[in-house]
Image 1 (tube, rainbow, N blue to C red):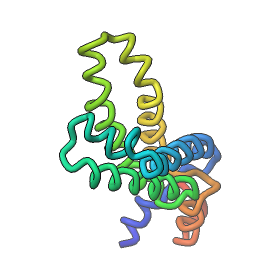
Image 2 (spheres, rainbow, N blue to C red):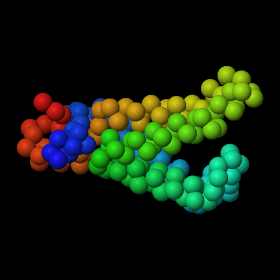
Image 3 (cartoon, rainbow, N blue to C red):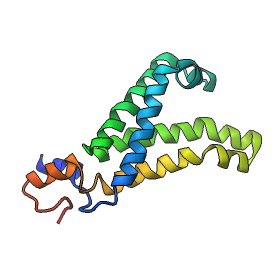
Length: 153
């Protein structure tokens, strides 16, 4: 059990993750909330336009994941685990919305339209690899597990 907890909460023992955490968390929190506020534009209506089955449920599910995972990343709790659903969301978004643009309008239009998607994917992957950093609940929990620093020895 302690081994699993160690894998979940270990993180780099410096401040490199602060800015990526802020960017990822605030954007996903905002996008999740907007899916509920503007369902016809970015929620169920958008999911229906893309062609997903049961768009109302799926939009609410994705929005809830974005809000919960964004909040966890913001406070630095279980960041590695929270990054996984966000990576899945981003990979799905790229394959369902950006690949068709590539096929219909070409590389440069796809590159322009996907810049935020790629940035969010790479920043989420960064957080999965490095964790929450020194200013986080993950670091505090890891230290309380009888480790001297946030990172594994």
